[in-house]
Length: 486
Picture 1 (cartoon, rainbow, N blue to C red):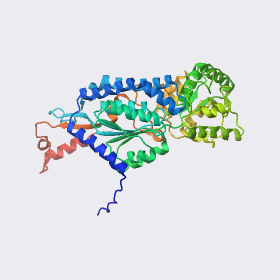
Picture 2 (cartoon, helix red, strand yellow):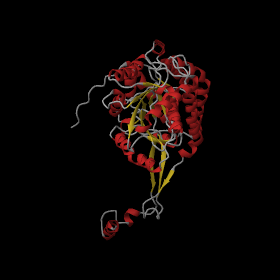
Picture 3 (cartoon, rainbow, N blue to C red):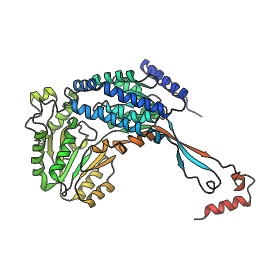
Picture 4 (cartoon, rainbow, N blue to C red):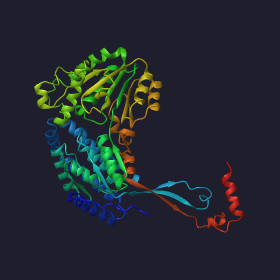
C-alpha cells in the first residue's frame, strides 16, 4: 500500500518558475528533432551576445568585485566562453551522428543491428557561481545547446551587477522558450533547485551542493556538480624550481586565488623551502609591483569572504606561525582592508587542525608542506577528500606515473596549474567531494544528452529458430549448452 502523499506547498516564486519551465518543455516537445542548424544558430547567438556585451560584462564584474581587471574578465569569462561555444559549433554535426555498436552473435550475422542515438534531455537548469559568473553560464551552455536542449539559469546573488547583465544578455539573444535567466537571493536558488528539470548543473561549494542534490533527488533530476576542494601542488626534486613557481603563482594570483582549480597547498622538498620563499617573493613582486592600488590585482569579492580569509591569517598569527607575505604590502593595512585586497601569503608547515588545512581557501593564501620522501606526498593526498585537481611539477617519469596512477582527482596537470580546464577536448569535472559528472567538448554534449539504445531485429524469426519460444525443446537445450561453454 502506498503512503499518502504529502501536500505540496508552493510559493508564488516557485509557481512562476514552474510556469517558465513548462513553457520551455512544451516548446521543446513541439519542436521534435532539433536539427544541427537550430543548434548552431543558438550557439552563434550566444557568441554574438558575448561579443556585444563584453564591455558591460567587464564593467559589471569590476563593480561587483570592487576591482577585477578587464584583462582577467576578457581572458576568462568572455574569451573562455567563446572558445567553448566555437568548439561545440565546429563539432556538433559529428557529435549528433548515431553511433553504431556491435550486435551480439548470432544476431549480428543474421542481420540484427545496434546503435545509439543521442537525444536532447529537454530543459537543463544551471546554477552559476560568483567567481567566474559569465563563463560558468556560457561554457556549460555550449554543451547544453549542442545537445539540443533549452536552458534556465540562476546566476549568483554575490555578483548582482553581473547577474543583471546576464539577465539582459539572455533576453537579448534568446526567446523565453529557448533560454531564461532568473536572478535573486538564496530563496530563489532554493526554489530553482527544486524544479523538475531534465538535468541540472551546479557549480559552487560542496556544502551547498549537498542541499542542491537533495532537492534534485525529490524529482529524480540527474545532476552534474562542479565543486572544488583542496587541490595539491607537488613539486619534485627534479622540477625546474623558478619556472615551476612562476606557473604556480600565476595560477594562485589569478582572480586572487578565487578559482575552484587554484592551487590550495604546496608540497616541496624540505631542503628547498628557503629557495622557494625567495623565488616566490621575486616572482610576485615582478607580476604585481603594487597590490592595494593595482587595478590588475583582483579584490576579494565581498566583505564576508575578506573576513573569512583575514580570519585564517589571524588564526595563523595567534598560533605563532610564520606568515610570509610575498609582497611588501601587509594584508591588514587600511588601504588593503578598504579595497578588500590580500597579498599572496605563504604559510610553511601549518598544523593539520587549522582551518587553512581543512577548508578550501579560495583566496591568495598558500600553505606549504615540506617532505623528505616523495612517497609522503602520495600518502598525504590520499588521506584527504578527493580534489578537483592534482598538480605535479617535475621531470621524473617514475614519480609522475606513480602520482597519476595512485591518486584520484577530477583532473591532473603536469608542469602547470589550471591549464587543463582550457583544453576543450578534455572532460572537466570532479570526483567525490570535488563533484560528479563532467562537461566540455564531447563529454559536455553527452552529459546533456540521453544515449538512447536502438536495436533493429533481423527479419528471421530468431526466437523460434533458437528455441527461445515455448514450447521449449531440444533447440532450447542446445542454445543453453552453447551459452554455458567458456
